[in-house]
Image 1 (spheres, helix red, strand yellow):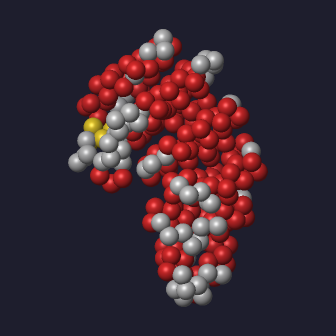
Image 2 (cartoon, one colour; image 1 turned 90 degrees about the vertical axis):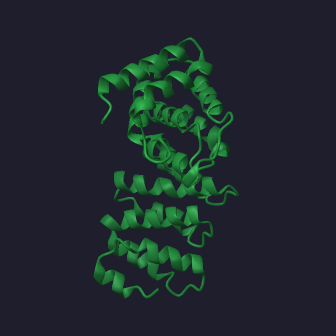
Image 3 (cartoon, one colour; image 1 turned 180 degrees about the vertical axis):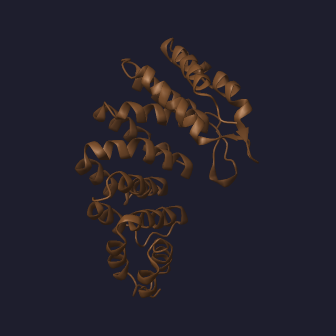
Length: 258
């Protein structure tokens, strides 16, 4: 059953009061208690849309507070305390992290500089695909829409990171960005180009995902881009070409020989 908006607001207000009092250590228990009935599936996790909605509401409530970034960062750090790895690459503490990211996403629409700093401060903590993808969708894209030049420079830098999750973040930003800005294909492909030989599966999958997303509105451009890599002997490049071309029209797909 879908959680009612009023219930989401109630949880957000409860969390806001705890943040206002700086009682951050108490944040986790009421959040999890109120979400207990929403747990589903084998892992008994709370669905992402519910956490997104709570985080967005919280972001609206704390938007004008001077302490918002400092306390959100403390909550973020607390989410990793005694965190455990789950199946499918997920980790415990995700509920707090998702609420923090979505609150930041709401704030990032109005405060570019401080939101960018917060994002950069948490990069080294990234350790799973789910958190990376929600950070890209909810925060990095908002920042990119406000200052494409600066953020895309960061994306290109991230493609050289030793941390695979930061490399994935660069790629995971492309798909939602191109949905918002379908005409800005060139800078997106310039970022993708840097990881066309990616070896790590989590990064490769994000590269292919970005290509498929661009091809929905710009199939010919993606086809011409992939043509440059058809002769590659690199097995990772071949995999990316194959997976990244899956949304191309059949006539263009047949012309690609991989």
